[in-house]
Amino acid sequence: MFVLGFSLGLIFGVGFWVWQQYQLNRYLAQMLQPLTTRSPLSVSLPLIPRLRDEIALVKYQGQFLQQQLRTYQDLLEFAPIGYLQVDDENQLLWCNEQARVMLYLERWQPGQVRLLLELVRSYELDRLIELTRDRAAQQIKEWEFHPSCESPQAVIDVKPIILRATSLPLSQGQVGVFLENRQPLQNAILMRDRSFSDLAHELRTPLTSIRLVVETLQDRLDSPLKSWVDRLMLEVDRLINLVQSWLDLTQLENNPKLQLQRQPVDIKSLIYSAWETLEPLAQRQQIDFSYSAPENIWIQADPSRMYEVFVNLLDNCIKYSNSHNKIQVEVRIIPAKLSASKIPENSREQMSKYTSFGESKLEINVIDSGVGFSETDLPHVFERFYRGDTARTRKPAEENSLNTTVVGTGLGLAIVQQIVLAHGGSIKAMNHPKTKGAWMQIELPEVMANYRSQDYI
Image 1 (cartoon, rainbow, N blue to C red):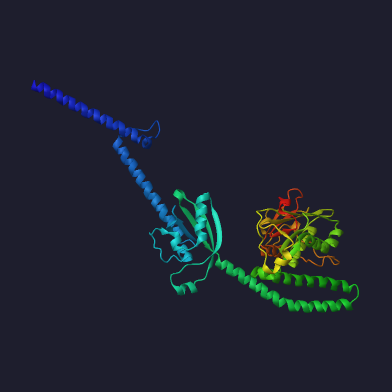
Image 2 (image 1 turned 45 degrees about the vertical axis):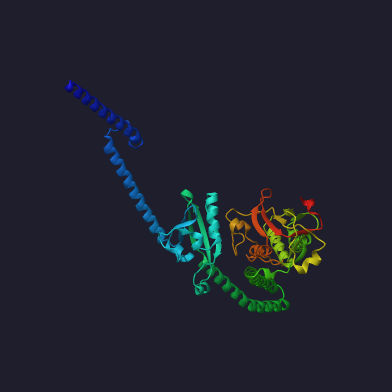
């Protein structure tokens, strides 16, 4: 009886152990199925060795990724541009040597995780990172960076630099920022401009002397020699205009505000006076002119500078238009919330009779029906001496040309842009969708009129 009970208990225990092993293997097979699936022809392996192989594979992949990460860090460490990376809370995780030098990160040590704003007192950089994270897209910004130094003497010695940053969104809210020091390029541009300005100053005296000699020869020579002297006079005038245009452009860029004598200007009278100067040249090509705008629109501007803007723009329209074409100037007010106008104290009395449009802007569209701009030229039309599509190359000055006000120098649109910017406005070049010609659009602030604001809303 005892032997029978022992045998039954042994059989029951062995059966229970076998059932537990079966259930364990079944559970492991379910858990490892995503890792072990190969193909219908794959050979089934024991579960434990297969698990060991999968762990070894994951370990190898981790080592490979770590090696790649070290390689990328080494490349970034010796890259000629700066790079830094922050987490989702704007804490600095890592940066290379160039970034440490540009941002004066003397207090940061590799491996530290500190708030970037504590290390680099730059609102522009912090804002750029936030925009990148919010918009989940690449952002680019250029600004003047003023380093923060602990030593008072270092604050005096360290000069601000121009930084250009390109930021990229990364995973888990992290952001990577590439930094480029633009100060050497800025210094080279300033040195170039200074050299050209010095050269322009030196050329004024000999050019004036040459012009006096040519004027004397014009009075003493007869045809056909006089025609050659007249052509020489045109070229001398062109050089004088080129020198003066370069000096004007340099002055506007260096100190634009001091070059402006602001006063109320009637925009209609200003544009018509510019057109009357160029009208003889337009009549030779039978080019018509049309002007459309609300009545009595005034702006706070320097009349002589703004006159120069419209003479340049209308002159370009005439030169690049075919005969029997039309030039259009359209003016409209872009209304905004009515507020008190910011008028200088010395102008308040003469401005009292005008209604201010506060933050409203004046939009001026100058449109021709010529060949327009090529797509490759549009980003460069305001650059100095830029020559683009040959279809828009200036026509050579003719011997008996009636246009003595504007001579092609390659600086006209650059000067126009600087004058508009000095007035707090903006200008952009486009091709008009209807006329297919050039379309210059100017926006100017501080619009005034003796009409009520609701008349334009």
